Image 1 (spheres, rainbow, N blue to C red):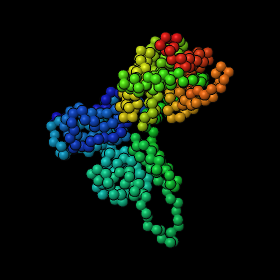
Image 2 (cartoon, rainbow, N blue to C red):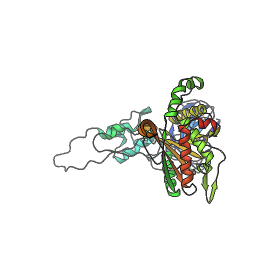
Image 3 (cartoon, rainbow, N blue to C red):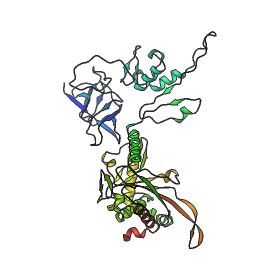
Image 4 (tube, rainbow, N blue to C red):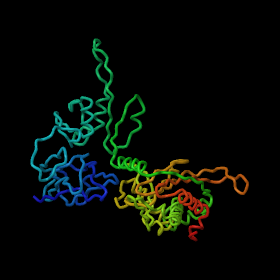
Length: 427
């Protein structure tokens, strides 16, 4: 027997622990080298844990939903075993490889495939729902793989018609059903249409971390927001003239974010404090421009970083943002792509936002909010004309950024967008 350990990969320096999301294999299953065994969620990304060698999983030591740290033992693979051979069942909770044997704990909702009295196996969320609704495993028919009882099976059992109570029995209030989907399962709006149900969904590590950082930003920064309006017609005309040639030449669509990033970098060069950060009682001025681009993903808001944005062409920026968007959708953003940043841009306009006050992404000191471009009546040379206008909002940390720098910085962005030639001439 040749045993190979499967361990938690190295996490980012700022990430102390992670959560196991879902095992794709069970004891006795054959695996190929580099085949993904389980997803691990940190507060930034979801990491895949590949099989270090081909073989058969003989033991799983940590359950779905367990909290783990870098280097912790997750499973063991026998590189000489045959699939289907006897294997150890997964443990109910993380255990050190060298820890002495201890009495088996009572089954809980966190237990992986906890055997029921009838021989059925309940998934973690299903087991919790069964306990909350006083259901035994014999009352629920398992339809999952190998007869496992799933969340859907429990919901079906709870929703099934019950025999009418005896006439003498006093009516009792119905107990609300707590629907607990898997940790990463999206909310199904159809479950909240009829009646008065409630659905309790645990925060993902990413959502919890975002919440923590936003509260931290509000509590530690002296946030103030300045606004300005931008006539987007020059950029829109430029885009309409060259978008087809641009896409043919670079293989990417010419959007508006490339212009916004370039305009922001031009302003940051003129007013470096907008690109700075606070470290204790020190102001750290950065000699580089790493721009965070807020991107929505199925797991929540993420902010991948455009490194050295000042050295990127508009084509480079558009291609990188498209790549970030696809990676965010697929959950493939790396820790390195989400770490750092000296200034951020949030584009609520893609969702129709007209105006907002974006929250600074610490330890940065400023963030630009972009909104929907709409035709509006404006005055030019004493005449009322219709122009495609966009309201820009820049939130900044008033501890180190005075109103003068903030307002002039936003004006510099406005001027660059209303006269894109400035970006070419470095004006």
